[in-house]
Length: 257
Image 1 (tube, rainbow, N blue to C red):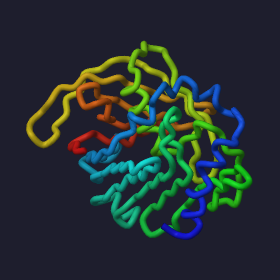
Image 2: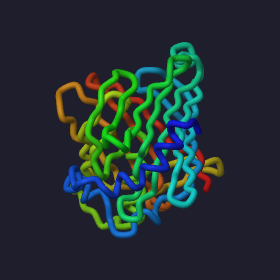
Image 3: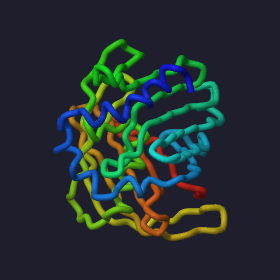
Image 4: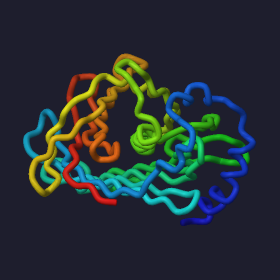
């Protein structure tokens, strides 16, 4: 870890205690008592496909590790075929931060890298309580409960382990940082659904809850996530649909601890 990130983690916890309640009301439904204990080490493997391109495009791995009050989460997609030509073989997302006893995942650093392009980073400046976006040089106020584009997936998983007493139409609103802005993501529980997965030892039927984001503006992508009750609420399927209806889908093919 570089010097900047070391300093960020040293003062991050103290700075978070000093923050006001901005954003807390929106994130209230996405948290529950003792949620930090529900953030667990995970090793997941997904097959990545696209609605407009035949065959498997990549294998994605999601790895999360918790050490005391800190966590590291990394998603890596090793591209194949056509996608490898576009992205030089690999797409990576990284999220690092604290595990808060009540708020769960509390990202302080988020990064994306597509192929050989420069790393796009966002991180908390604890002294100014601003999220700094290195890609565009802009910033936004830090808010309690803030997630990023990868931590939000596992924040919901922790929420379900803590309390899965939800019904269709219930919402889990979040503020989420990308590499250039902070935006609203409202996950709506759409339905329960049975999925058939092949985790390497034959097909298996699992019961899931399917969540879907509500677009804020025309042209916003829609994120759908299926969480498997039979797999300790791990994400079994993740789908991102663009404004034209084209979808990129990750389907779980392996799960470890």
